[in-house]
Length: 314
Image (cartoon, rainbow, N blue to C red):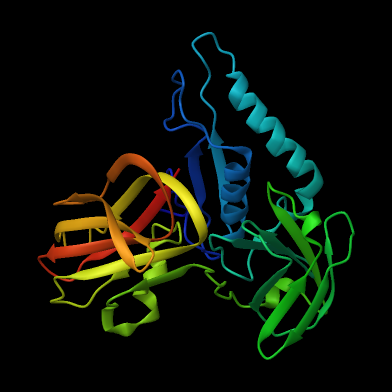
């Protein structure tokens, strides 16, 4: 690492002191391949917003086909992203990251006296953020449509018409009473309903939600000496899924020796799959199930287990 750094195929952590650039592919690899799984426009915009919100730059790779053309599926995604950027360019170009650090559901950028709040996963007509140490003078969507807001008791409340939500990424502009760059970075709410049977020293740094925040720099960890534990997430509503991806942390080496992936069915648990080791790149498909709460039940570990990321996928 020198004057800058370039995380590949992952979004870098918030850093407003040293330049960085996330290098990511639209497909699953740097070169084109037939029938590759490509990211949707919403996924690309989320990656872009969280990268800009972390004070970084995004390099998005598109691999040409053997004849030099860009695959039509990729062209369509890029066109959708282009249309979104036409409407929301002020929230991306020429901005700096923050003041709220990026999370799975939110990112923020700033310039002058404006803060742009990128709502990436919104289902309701309201959103709550840790308050800023300044006065918010106005709030509006990028088209100028007003947004109701209030500040008090350490919270900033935003209330809006749910029909105004853009499925690709909604941006709310806040006008402040002073320069936005004077504000220190603030942790954004995770909005992840996760829990675990044990957390390392019962601290926030290794809490259960860190295994579901789509951030490779954070992890859930149990106390040293713990050899059995569970980690679970509440998806908020019944969700159909058929894949699971688990990344066991490299810290301390491979520790998990026996485990189950389960879902809650009434007051009990049903096992979807079972295994011995997980390691850094565990992926498994299974017949689709619909559930709200999913659990990794660790039956045997050599020491306190720790998980970088657990994903439940369609």
